[in-house]
Length: 346
Figure (cartoon, rainbow, N blue to C red):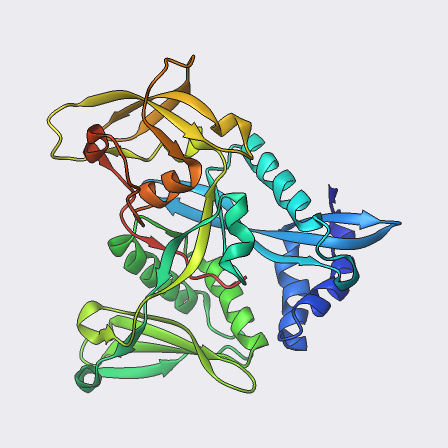
C-alpha cells in the first residue's frame, strides 16, 4: 500500500469510472483536472496494477475557534474482480493510522452504505436538512444568477459570495468548511461539470444577500445546496443522515471541547476509559481535564474502575449528534460541539 505521486494519480481514473458509472464524463474530467491537484490517493496494487483505492480530499474545517485541514474520504473502490478480499479494509486501517500519526482530529465521508463503514468506527454526525423557500418570502426578493460558464465573476463578486456563506455558517454552526474565495471558485467549477446553476437572492430594497441556492444535473435536476435566512425557509421533509465521521486523534479532537458556561467550577478533571480497536493511541485510560475554553486528555495507568465509552459513541456525543447511554453524572457539565454542517460532495 502506498500514496501515489502526483504524476501517477491519473492511473486511478479507470477504476473510478468502473466504480462510479453514474458520474458524467464532464464531472470525471473536472475531478481529475481539479480535485487531484491537492488530494492524496492511497492505493493497493497487484503486479503493478491498482486494484483498490481511497481518495483523501483536503478541506479546511472550522471547529469552534480553531481550523484544521481534514480529509474528506471519497472514491473508495476496489476493482470488480478483486472485491470481497479485504483490500478496502486494509486501506482504511492504514489511512486511520496515518491520520493519527499526523494528529488529524477526525475524518468524514458520505457513505454509499452505512454498514460498510461502521466496522471501522464511523458513525453519522450530520443530517442534511430538507428545506424549501417560503412562498411569502419571494415578494421582497430578487434573483440574480452567477455566471458559471465562463468563470467571469470578478474577484469582488466571488469575495461577496464567500463572505456571505462564511458568515451564514459561523452564525449557526461550530463545525463547517471554511468558505473562502478558492472554495467558491472550485464549487463553481464543480457545478459547471454537471450543468449547474447558482442563484443569489437579494433584498430588493437594500441589495443585501439573504440566501442562495444551486441546482445541477444533466438528465434530472437536483438541488446542490440551499442556504437561506430563517424567515425565508421552511421544512420540506425530514432531515436525512448523510455524513459519517471518525475520531482519528483523540488528543487533538478534544481540544475545543469545554465545560458548559453555567458550570460553577472553572475546571473539571476526570478519568475515562476510551475503547478503540483500530487506533491504539486512542485506546486506554485517560485523565480528561476541561475548563471553559477547551480541554486536554492525557494517558494514564489503569486506575481500575472508571467510566468507559467507545470511540464511536464519543464522536456522536461530542459532535452533538447523539448522547450515549451510561454516561457518568459529571458528563452533564461538558459542552459538546454545537452544530455541524458538512455538505461537501467530493
